Amino acid sequence: MTTPFEIPANPPVAAQRLTDAERDHALAVLREGAAQGRLSHDTFLFRMERALAARRSDELALLTADLATESTWTRRVVGAVEKMSAFTAKLGRAWQAERLPKLLLPAPGPHPLRIGRDPVNGLRLSHETVSRLHAELSLQGGLWVLRDLGSTNGTTVNGRRVVGAVVVRAGDMVGFGQMAFRLSVN
Image 1: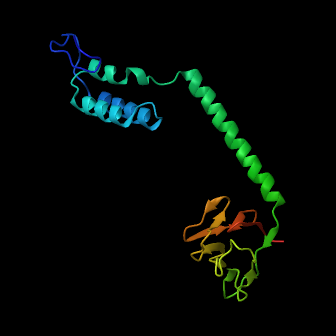
Image 2: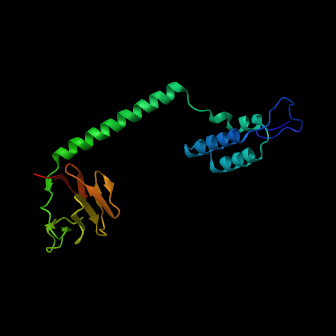
Image 3: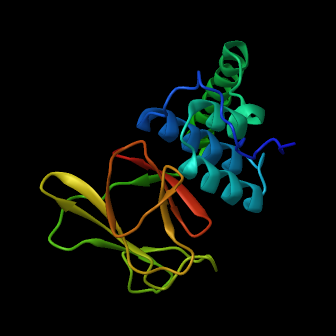
């Protein structure tokens, strides 16, 4: 008698030879099952090893049978929930942006606007989450560029952390540590 994942000694004659596409699909199903937590690490490794050694489609079917993909109805419901969640998150950000204090973009000049806790900065923010030299805002080639200066608590634009420099425009939400503003031209 064989276990569910053992290859029988006398394989059925009607089984077709395995294609690369079938093997790739089975490996993808196994990876997805592991990513979703439906397979333990050891089970995942065992099945991946068997999938790579498989020679027929029916062998792969045994390895992925319990990981059948969701029905079309389930995918539609999950997709609708994802879209609604994204919409409510976007609505929440828009509502929050309107309530934030405005940060007026400065008049273009030869030097960037430095932002931080230190009194030498053009914009001094006296909050403990703002670094002494936190960020700088400059006009480069007609575009406003916000650059993080290695701050401890980070600089964000529209909820995403700035790494290096990023182009900003009026209406963007910018954050320096826990201080947040909405950029404005007036």
